[in-house]
Length: 236
Image (cartoon, rainbow, N blue to C red; front, side, top):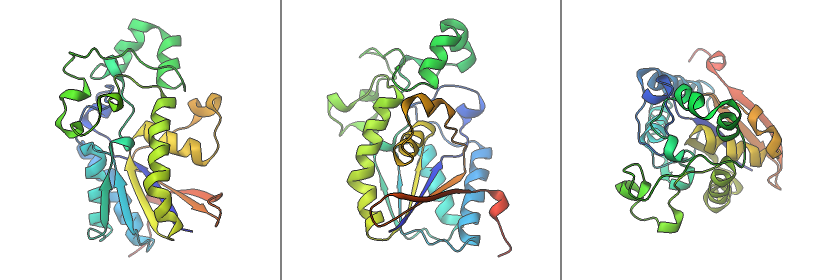
């Protein structure tokens, strides 16, 4: 069975500004570029050969994957993208400072939405310029697929669906798969793979630029999991 590597994109400009990003297409900050470079160097130093890469439609995930593959000397491999790996859609909170939102709605609701499992943020109106129907990247999605504010549970549904549609078949072939995505879509995949129950999701931390490795047995049952960080680098 193949090996799965999950990585949350490097820090974006809005991560640094503490702004809810969601489906907004914000690029990597210099710190995020550095995190991706280090991840690529770790893969190269550990002699890991990635066979295929997946990312979301959002540039911070795409660029993270591209930088990793560049520094790992693996730019030639297949690279597939899907909206189902996009970050959770934060609805009307997208573009707002997290501390200001918390002050407006109160601690309990803020944390229920941000770190909880089933509570969605306030929805976007259909004429809001942040609505995904106005983003050309998603022109091929049906109206029913366009989220206007998602809970983690809803994000998990689409991310796990794509996991079985596209990623598992590659793992079954014995391939090593890199997935570059987002805090919540990665949390969703981790939760499924590790059989995390909803009440435990608030404890799941996904750090930017960290390579989270999963190994499976022949029945796709989790056999081992570990992380590769800067401390994993060895002399090349």
